[in-house]
Length: 156
Image 1 (tube, one colour):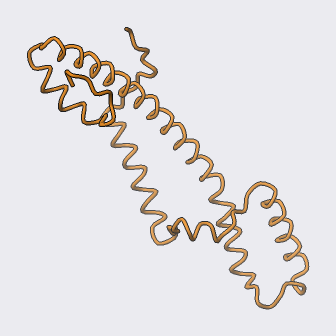
Image 2 (image 1 turned 180 degrees about the vertical axis):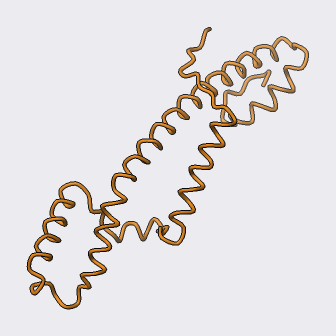
Image 3 (image 1 turned 60 degrees about the vertical axis):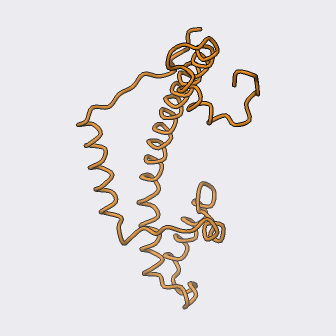
């Protein structure tokens, strides 16, 4: 039974090193600036995106146009810095999300190819073990541990 090879891709050592350097550079830049929230903390804070982004920008515009209506407990300098950083990060996050999604999709197809080929080998090994092919039984016994709930037969 022929298996479809869903994807064929490779990376040179130089390409992988360049990716690693780019990631290291990004990590260096954001170190001390970016935070890592716990999953529970992420639920506490809303995300400003899409329609809310327009509203926040409009609110900021009103705040700038008539500062006397801004409550005294809002630090406008900090608010301006926050909105500037937020606007700066958004397009970069979108780019990174696109890169991450394509890498994950590629890896998913690679994993599917690997699993299907491994499963084909495993099934072939099972049949070889049934006819006592040299070396097949030990290899089959080693690999069948992945499927503990499999069918129980006399030869298993």
